[in-house]
Length: 466
Image (cartoon, rainbow, N blue to C red; front, side, top):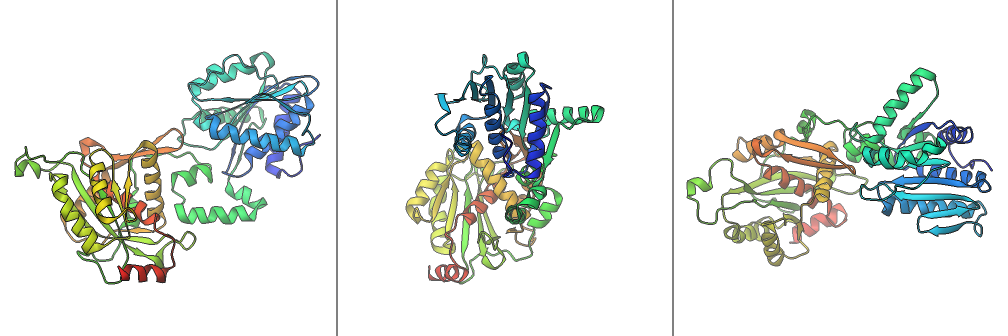
């Protein structure tokens, strides 16, 4: 049995190198970076079927680890079951446990590489695979997975895509490239989206759309499609990105007839409960509640997704003001004056009460409470970067106002930090000021993305009818 000819040339090159190392007991470690959806999981499944076949009489274990059992290992399990069936082994393979599959005397074992997972004691006789290796802790791999193949000098295969340049995958990749320079034996295989697109034009069209939507500088596009590590200097937006964000339309203090709007409210973490004097409540450095309003421009939006351009037209902010006292003003501004199609409201901590009040006053179809968590904030940050990179977010022209100055002050001081599992944290360090304008901006992008998908003419008719 050979590796199926449905594999593309770059997949075959990897498969043959791994197979040679396994059969000749070379014990090589390979690193593989293939652009997202480029076929690494298919290669893995076909290798597993082939090796189970070759060792079904002799016996031995193949071990595959991944950062999570669900969904990552589960997807690998389902794919292996499909490939075993296609190979004609439908009535021959069996399950010894939820994570162990047997063909003859050979076994495929799937193990979670989560830090808390107990995997010590397993043995990899034939092949050791680590999927999404950039998300696996180095200590977990070297202390618990790597020794599984010590007695058999097992061949090891690390799959994934780059992330922060300091991952297990990047470390192994650097070591492999150094060994290649010394002995000429290829151990690192890398195929970006353009190589995959050579063999699948439909894939190429999709990724070109993602490049248009996200921008080439977006962390996810760089890592998953260009296969480049994402290095940040700490700044959320570069100078060129801030230049893209700056628009030339005028600021508005009232809506234009027939236009459609969205709004975002970032709620102050600390407010004046009456114990502060007016001077103390309005002193510089205190957290603020910030309302950002954007006009939807469907003519200059994303033609692929239908998402409109969001043109920021107004800022309102309140410093040291009790939230309860703002409620009537917010209801008037949002319900009578601007009448936005969607309002994203910070519902974290103290904001929960304000979000609930506005939801009751304006309707749940208009108000969307947003709770900040590490995961939700990361997605918010990625969406903000995509909107800036694609030109779908523009700020009103300079007007010399305090709001304009504070907005740019916060964006220039905003920092971003890459975290495990492809998440990102962003904020303004407390020593440098506040990030209420920044968070209101990110929430505005969220409000603009979650509009009902309607045609441009219908959207303007709906806005005019309100």
